[in-house]
Length: 146
Image: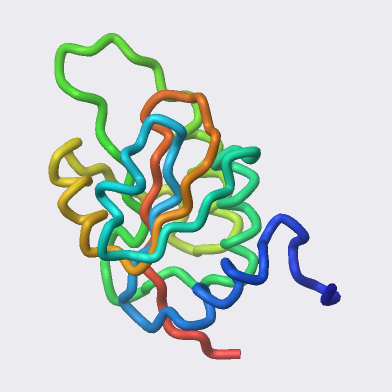
């Protein structure tokens, strides 16, 4: 055990966060996301008993967002024509606002298949048991200055 580290972050996940460099991306995926097939060239960490918000909150405590890009936080956009509400996005934006001066402006969306393509290039994918629809979030790591 370590002091100051969120207990939800496993040693494997801490190692991955530490290994990531400036510009690397990590996906925190909902339970419907094809984590293993999309992440076959990435590190996939299983966190099935947890939801995306609790993992996002823990990761953001240790993970600086990239200031070199306009939208270091990307969400999977709802497919046009689907009638799906995404209240979880408001939760994410609140969390981002607490750690990034750009607030909700640091959060963008990618069309579903563009999100999958970007996720294939991610350094790691965290597979959660999140049941909310369109709850996937991708973070781009910034520079650690402290």
